[in-house]
Amino acid sequence: MKMLLVRKFRVLILMVFLVACTMHIMIDLLPRLERRGPEGRPGCSCPPPAAAPPRAAPRWPGKHTLRILQDFSAEPASNLSSQSREAAERAAVPAGGGAAAGRARRLIGPGAPRPPPPAANAAPLAALFQHPLYRAALPPLADGDLLFNVNSDIRFNPRAAEQPEWQNEDHHEEFLPTGETSIDSYPNWLKFHIGINRYELYSRHNPAIEALLQDLVSQKITSVAMKSGGTQLKLIMTFQNYGQALFKPMKQTREQETPPDFFYFSDYERHNAEIAAFHLDRILDFRRVPPVAGRLVNMTREIRDVTRDKKLWRTFFISPANNICFYGECSYYCSTEHALCGKPDQIEGSLAAFLPDLSLAKRKTWRNPWRRSYHKRKKAEWEVDPDYCEEVKQTPPYDSGTRILDIMDMTVFDFLMGNMDRHHYETFEKFGNETFIIHLDNGRGFGKYSHDELSILVPLNQCCRIRKSTYLRLQLLAKEEYKLSLLMKESLLKDKIAPILYQPHLEAMDRRLRIVLKAVSDCIEKDGYDNVVENDFNTDADTATTER
Image 1 (cartoon, rainbow, N blue to C red):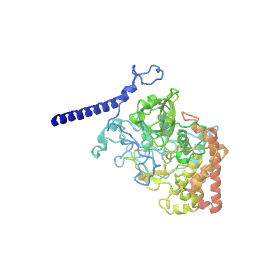
Image 2 (cartoon, rainbow, N blue to C red):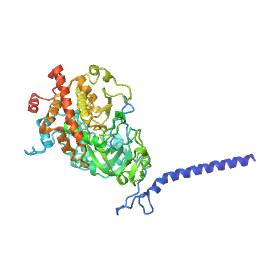
Image 3 (cartoon, rainbow, N blue to C red):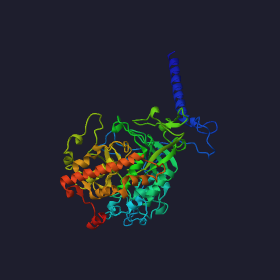
Image 4 (cartoon, one colour):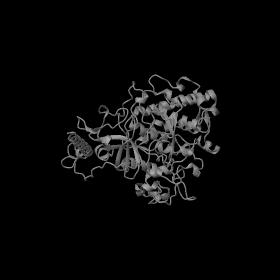
């Protein structure tokens, strides 16, 4: 009797195990079965689309098949808070590498051909970029000033990205990231990467930047995944040419303002703010924002049907209005109530080009000294201590070099946009402390056109320091012939989803520019011109030329 009970128990355990295995298999097969209707179309209640070439059914990735070329944000080793950007799922594919000794040379830089001078009736933007202030030369670049020293004789081979041996030092020469066509045929994202140097993300007249902006809106999207973590939904999109970009979908219309009862840390991230920030950064001649372009994306064909992310795929649904919607996973606004819906399956978004992968070009993440408290009631130290800047200036890296001036540039940039969400910033580790700040993550700018947030200007008011080049450009952009709002409007019209900014936002930038100039003027009156304005021009001749 006892033996019979033992046998029955064993049979029961075996049956439970078989049922569990069967359920796991069905769960894995269910997404494929749900996707296809009786005629092979995606399983939705939408009317059948016009005849189109058949597409292969999407495949879920194996554990080691998904290779991501670059990473948009740093994986900090320290000083990160819950508000910081998280590293995305990725596997490195090199974007710029070592070269034979003595053969490395700079490929894209200030020496690139410049466009001919504009005609007398040229557009204001073309006239601005021909102004002497926008033609000042950088210091001479040594090998240590380049992010990558690239051997242009080694050709680009995309198939090298599929080989696991590229990480092996014994195969280093075989799988260099620049391998099977001439340098002119490198992908534009790679040209962008190898043009980065100590002073800028891209040179003023780098033709690869305009080509990269075009790629962002025209390249075929081959895979999509959610960016892990983050307070709001962002997608990593991979293109047919192995480039990648960060997609931020549209959440607000152009004319909507941030609700007055919203805290800055719970505000929406706006796709058009990312686009406008890139154009503003270029007009200010900082060139510290990676290229960003707007794109109209088909949510069915370019997201749902190509995603390898099961968690993302399962959040797609059809709304009562028969529109395709999804919501993904994130801390804020990722629910059915805050779903992103197309019309019926088209959605706007911004695409920001990725920076080089961290395995190739490490970045250091720094806590912004004027970081806000990110608390509903508490205030940060700088908000209650008027002498806070004196303490900052005695702390590395702000006690030497140009970092404090970089913070002032970033302050002006953020104030013009109305961006209160600058908790951390990043720099390229290779260049140490003598390099620029990368202006990443600008989605919370351009939220209010009817209000100027003066607390953003506190660093400038407390420190009373600014670069001469920045000060002169701000004065230039306040003139009627180079009016900032008109230049921004002209520049933004080039984007595929223009208009990008509501007209009151453009007018608000002119108003805020006058406030910045008044703050600098007050500092000069209080401390003297030479103590406030730092001459960053290379020679006296450059200074005389730019002041004309």
